[in-house]
Length: 345
Image (cartoon, rainbow, N blue to C red; front, side, top):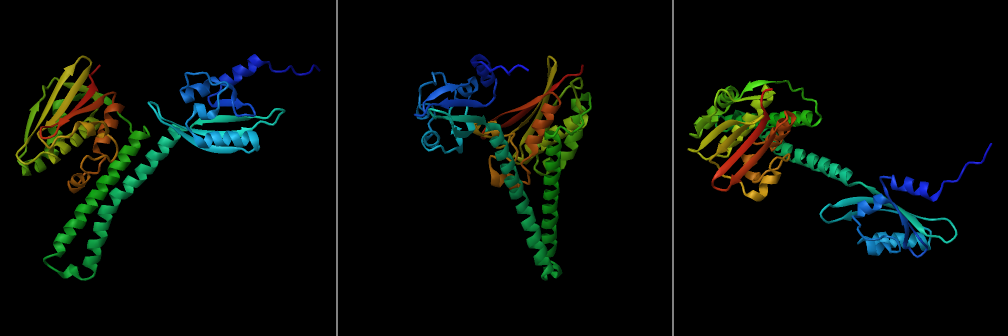
């Protein structure tokens, strides 16, 4: 049997350059002697890396110290780097000594940016849900305890307390339903069935749902939708998108205001817009408006009973149907939300 052939420098270099993780090797003085392509991409390095000390390449005292310890004391280390700039990165770095004549060290860089982002999203989500649940639960518990302790027989205060408990339980139910809906959307578990949807008919059905609240605030609706405007989309999803947008419009429009619904065809797309004469939103807040639980005015939004998930659901539904949603707004003028959906084939 012939002895196995040794791997040549060219083959080894190809293997290293094929790695997703960044890698560098240093000499006993901690200066880089070899590295792969992935490392240059992770560090956004346009300059030559060889012959340079880590302190010259990455603004991280812990990394430089870890490389020095690996070279001089033979100690390994694991650390996490946060690189700022136009493309922020979080790198998990493992530094180890090289055991051979001459010494030195090597470091393996793994990009965990997306993992840390997902961890933060999960943490923020749990914190937001907990916060949203705490308010109605506290109210229900407080008034239930008051009723149990004798207020149940108070003919003047008891009905008001029971009404508050009922309204807060409805708020809890709405939050749970929105959470379940958003969970199904994000997991792609919602089965959408595209059909020809007459947008005017869908809008009129949704208006009947929000009309009672609008009438109480003397809000006037204007519908400018031709009967020929149709979308190729899931009928239930279209109505849910319109319901969320119209409900928001009524909620944030002052008494005596108006809400206008327009729709038109634009090539192979249909554009439906909901314009209100409400409070309006500063431009700096608009990019985050479709995030889960994001509120421009947290106190006012909760006071009005919103779950903070409606616009996020609108965004997910629109995208799931092959469309999108956008917003323009100005304080004191009002807001216009525009949904784009595919036209019938």
